[in-house]
Image (cartoon, rainbow, N blue to C red):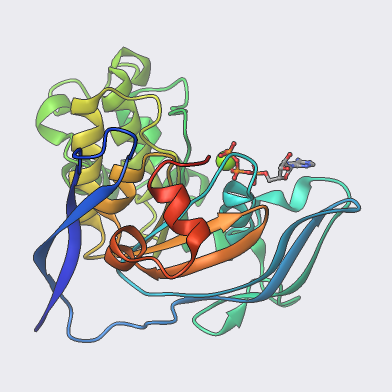
Length: 286
Ligand SMILES: Nc1ncnc2c1ncn2[C@@H]1O[C@H](COP(=O)(O)OP(=O)(O)OP(=O)(O)O)[C@@H](O)[C@H]1O
Ligand SMILES: [Mg+2]
């Protein structure tokens, strides 16, 4: 096993009250000895809504079983990039792309690839938790039932496994048949994470998963993200600079659809190469 330095804790450096500069406190974590540093490859990727280009020639290698944060001001294209990875924008009229996104070398736009099978490899968690109007149990097993998997032992096992992984089991194990809407906001978001991993995807896409949560619930989700990256490749969009510094291994800074800088999180926050990145992470714009 290799031990890799990982950014997992961050505090504001407050000697300059005008600055939001963030100090990353690296902490050790064990990473599997082998992982694919190019699990997801974004290659010369541009994207258009109609005639409006919103992503410009992006190139990124996203490593397996690490957390990659997408940061940048509102409207810079973070959600667009994230949602294109599982082709969620497909239903929008007039979209077009150039370049490619590949998962383990296979294009997500391969005409022989079924979008359904792509989405099985990818779980998605949204800003606002969106449980189905069903019980806690049925929320989690929904995708298995849709796939015709109804064996009780498998469903029970999935519910327990995913709720434990989402650090929710102890809080809900005695109320699995209650409505998901009886949960608190933070619990609902953890339920949505449990649901997203029920089908055992490889990749978890999270679009501002904590923006509606209080600091305690946010802390729980951040701990969870830290644990989940042992098994999943995670991409998280966040406006919270401290969160990006705490949870991610790599950070991409986007500005007006351009990838300004993409590097180790520690480097982006402590010693960015680009003046625009420095200005953004220190709170001087955005
Ligand atoms: N369905 C759509 N049709 C047309 N334009 C869109 C659509 N969705 C997003 N856009 C535009 O694409 C650009 C990027 O939007 P996107 O939602 O990806 O930004 P973002 O970085 O996620 O912003 P935020 O931080 O506010 O969530 C914006 O100019 C936005 O107006
Ligand atoms: Mg967004």
